[in-house]
Length: 104
Image 1 (tube, helix red, strand yellow):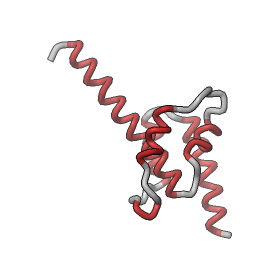
Image 2 (cartoon, rainbow, N blue to C red):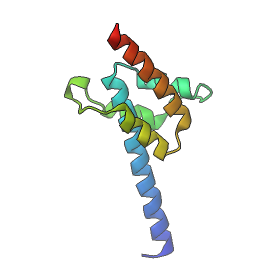
Image 3 (cartoon, rainbow, N blue to C red):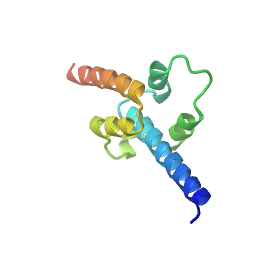
Image 4 (cartoon, rainbow, N blue to C red):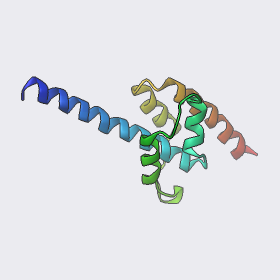
């Protein structure tokens, strides 16, 4: 494998992993009765237009009754792997609100 092929493979692997991170985020939101787009907008209010990766991930989510459980810790770990600190901060706030709703 030459250097160019290796670089392409690394880029493709990163994109695949990033897609998985967005899907985990979107499914976690669905599982917790949250709108992934709204949560994302709270983290990135200045971003113009729709995030294509998020739109695609949302289309792949399943109803929460059909989904495996995604723990908040897993989501935060995945977000931190990609340095997605702004979104992790908002997710943490949302987690607190979900806990409050469940305790009421």
